[in-house]
Structures are given as structure tokens and as C-alpha cells.
Length: 173
Image (cartoon, rainbow, N blue to C red; front, side, top):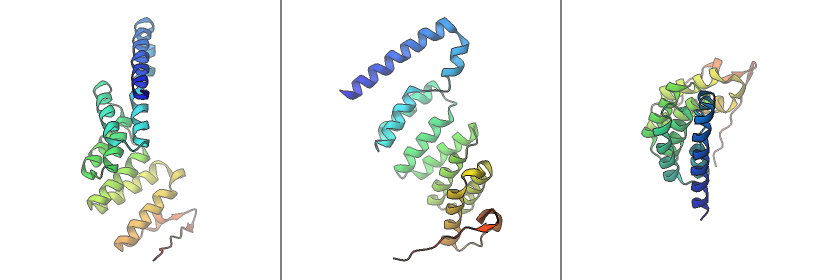
């Protein structure tokens, strides 16, 4: 019943959007081209761990807005949660081709790491660090985890922040 109400609400809102587009023309179109009601619904499905439903909604939305990087990102996240790492890597790459955001590189690195492409995963993490240096702690942590797992010599430039070493302890339990 709740699903039916949401679908009816979406249809009603889309109808109103079409009317507004007809009345106000291109100014409204510019604002609405980057927003999607189905994207919000798909993210809700993702958060409810209903990944197949999320992918279906996102694929439907992709037909309407084929250049929306967020849609590719969320399809990639859903496919990642379903352990479809090769497919998720493809969708993250498509999102990156549209817009370079640190979160796209971060999640693509995770897919590549599961696929065994460690060198590319490291490059993606370095790119995420360079795009968003203010939010790089999780990226540096992930990078150091790869270095520790694979016994790769760390690159000081990427493992230090503010001239202080970031310590990462392994727990063996």
C-alpha cells in the first residue's frame, strides 16, 4: 500500500513538473534536469538493502537522464553490495567520466581491490586524496590497509598528513 502511494505521488509530481515546464520553459528545465524523484526512491531502496529494486528504478531513470553521474554511482554501489564487482567498476567508471568526485574514485578502488587490480586501486585512492584533501583520512587509512595487506612499501607523501605519521595498528584476534 505504501509503495502504491509513493508511486502515485511520483506520478502526480511528474505531471506537475511537466505543466510547470510548459508554462515556465527552459529556466525550470535547467533546475529539474539534475534532480530525480526516482533517484531518491532508489536510494531509499538501497538503504533498505533492496538492491535489485534500487537498480530497476535507477535503470528506468537512466533512460530519462543518461548523463546523471549520481545514477551511475548508485547503480555501482548497488552492484557492489551484490558482489558484482566487475559491473560496479564499470558504473563507477561511467560516473567518473561525467564528473570527477572523490567518492566515485573511492568506491571504484574498492571494486578494483576485490577484482585483484591493486595498482589501479591505489591510483584511484590517490586521486580521491588529491580531489578532496579535507576528507582524506579514510582514503589514507584504506591506502595503508592495502599497503599492509600486500606488503607494499608505502609512499610517504600519501601516508602522512600535516607532517605526522598516521598510525594504523593491526589487531590479531
